[in-house]
Picture 1: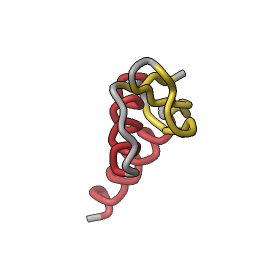
Picture 2 (picture 1 turned 180 degrees about the horizontal axis):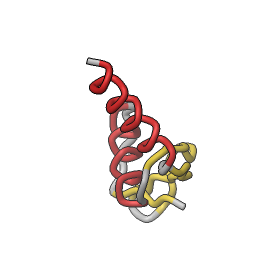
Picture 3 (picture 1 turned 60 degrees about the horizontal axis):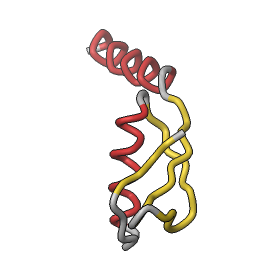
Length: 68
């Protein structure tokens, strides 16, 4: 049981260690909509997916999201 808990803890720590913070902006018809949001992810593509989901849940209409 101790090995299982230790393994889970190490997996959580390693995934958080490699995460970066991205600033993402949503676009509708080529114009930025809403405020830019910050998302933590390991890659730009993952950050854009997370940001798109969050913005849609907030009721913002958008075509795509770009993250820096």
